[in-house]
Each structure stands twice: as structure tokens, then as C-alpha cells.
Length: 302
Image 1 (cartoon, rainbow, N blue to C red):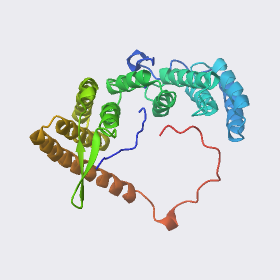
Image 2 (tube, one colour):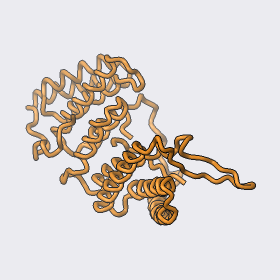
Image 3 (tube, helix red, strand yellow):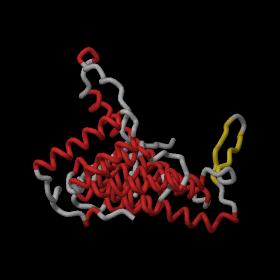
Image 4 (cartoon, one colour):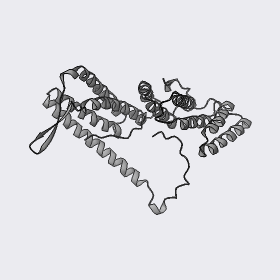
């Protein structure tokens, strides 16, 4: 059974390396008079954003950025507004340009605050949404290798990269000419077979799985309690079992299935522990505050 953890991503991506960002978070702060102007512009952005007047909101956000180029709130406001104007699924060049300008804005925000989670995840989401897979991988790898980032977040980035290795294999092994259902009596048995004409591609798929394992082991070295890493390790082991069956390696297949079961159990325990922790932090329903009035949400990065 596949375990499909929620992706944060995304993504979680020609991105500037985190290692190139300045060590200090904020290069300089605006002078008091300038701060008042920036605050006024950002107040306008908030109002217009909630009203859905994104083009006008962007104009005020850009003005705030011109007044105070090193102001982190101004930078992230501009990025949010540009992100909101991008429409997923719209394949026009104009819409692609909106995504590009939003990515640029988020990266400018990261130059001021290298550990800004919203900006990092939003860039990953935009790379994924615009199918810029090579840039997405580069973005994730930069995150994974950045020593400034907490180990659990680096592990998550490695795990997402491992997931790409699993996805590469899964799309191959689940093809109708590879996944064959045989009926024996009243029982249906799934077997994985390799047509001779697919032998060349099969070697590439094995490389995908091997790279996936490299990424997942790097994740677990950083955080042995990473739920997403154990989930992807489970799935990669299942893919290895399928590939072994394609080669007629029954003993190897059984061993991969055993390892997958063990990894899946570890992932299950971690998921249960997380759910219990989440439940323990929730207030009883009678004590929970009423939700605020609905407003238009800013672009999600999850």
C-alpha cells in the first residue's frame, strides 16, 4: 500500500543560493519619515488585497519597495500580491511572466530574511506549478544543503527530492503493459513484467530509484524522525520490489517487501505520534475562539 505524504511541497525548486545571502537579516531600516510612508503604502495594500483589487495593491506594494528597498515587510507584501495575480493552470506567456515576477519578489524577500519559510515554500510552489522541474530540484537541493536551515527542514527538502525518484519509477511500473493482473481461481494476483522493448528505459528507472534512496538516506541522517522521509523510503522499497520481480529476482523482491513493511510501520508510528501531539494542543470546542470573518486568503504555500 502506498504512503503518500502531503507535499509541501512543495517544493517542496535558477534560484539564488541561500549561501549567497548576506549573513545579517536586514541590511538597513528606513528612517522614521520613510517608515511612515511605507506603513501608509502597506495599509493600502492590505485594504486593496482584501477587496480583490490586486493590480492596485501591487502598485502600492511596489511603491513601498521603492521607498524602502531593505524593508522586509514591504518585500513580502509585494511578493504576495504578485503571487495572487498568478493563475494556476493558465498556460499563457503573460501568466507565466506573473509567476516569474512573483518568484523574483520572493527571492528578494529571502535576500533580506534568508530563513523566511513563506518565501521559500512559495517559490517551490511556483516552480512546480509552472513545471520548471529542473529549477525546482535546484531550489530544493539548495535548501537541503544549507547549514543555516534547521535539520528537520533540510531533511524535508531531501525527502521531497526522494519523492521525485519514487514518482519516476511509479509512473513506469504502473503502466498497463508492466502491471499485469492475473486471475488464479478466485484470486487476483498483481505481477510486474518487463517487455523487452522497455529494457533501455528500465535502466533509467533503476537510476531514479537509486537517486531516490540517496536523497532519503540523506534526509534520515539529518532527522531520523522525519515522517515524510520514512514514507518515501517505504514507497521506494515497494518500487524496488516491483523492479526485482520484473527481473525475476524473487528473493530480492521478498526482501524489499519486508524492508518496506518495516519502514511503513515506522512512518505509521510517527504519523500517530504527530496526530496525538496535534490533538493534545487543541482546545476543547467550548473554549475555542470563534473564527474571524472570512477574508480573501493570500496565496497558500502548503
